[in-house]
Image (cartoon, rainbow, N blue to C red; front, side, top):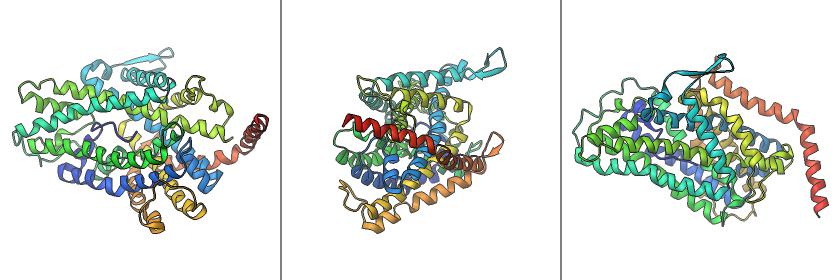
Length: 446
């Protein structure tokens, strides 16, 4: 749920160059990942509830902010979940150019779409089917996909020393870069975010109080290595930073390295196939996470009861999965950079509510059993969110350079945040009705 391997990192070196790009990838785990992992480790061990971060914020800050946490997370998911079918199509086009060519007409020719949309639809539909099959199927699928998609980069790291210095100057300017230095930081933040997504399935995880903190720390180290090592290896071959000029460039880089070494001409194909598996695996895992939010909200009376419907066999929230998937489809037509910008902005706002909740629960519920605590006592809990907050301010500055539907992306994101306040007020009577129904059902069962 945090990382699908090295794919999608191209813009970091393209916008920042090797030196600064690698430094960004080394410092972000300390400034962005570890504080977040510490916060999530404590909250998930204290409140291992279905719905994860939504349940934490609701317990620590009340119904209003719990609703806003879910609103922001689900709004971010609309843009986040469109990124992975987009990346899937980017890599698929390198194998089958037809998916990057032409358009097909819909509704009598009044609406045209690129062929790549078909690939995106395939990803969405396939992952919905896998998720309806249950959490264990998704978990095993994600694990094997991660191992397979990491294999080509392990080969790149292993064979690159054979061609050390064989190519041009690695310090050559990254001409044609799709993002600025700040944009590169933004892309790196996106590659390092999502730590709280695993919290929404806490009731379906064995020994969550011990499992979550250990998994968080191990994942920070593993994810950092999968990003940094391939870039360092390619740097020493002498391939210039300008080679990372667009998403999907890892395939052509692999072709350059593999083609120069006998027997490794198929390396490009492996990376291309791995990029498709990466996007598919990320989407598959995140369907599992996001679909549990409406389920938890419905059980709390915050959404209609239909969202709480689950399958009899494995208690999978099939209605929530299907409705979420329909909401994710419209954003498949947006570009990668716009999707990342809006995703980070909305996700970041939700993340800051979680840091506030960490402090609030230390004050309001000091006797909660915590299998893990953020180091440094209350001071550690308070300062934990400082660096992530500063990075999110940078993300908001960068969002001013993007536009969505003719509107400044910062204003567009602000409007979505404001709509959460409006939605809470507008649905007050409905939420009271749903909560009353839940109370009545509980009394009847008792």
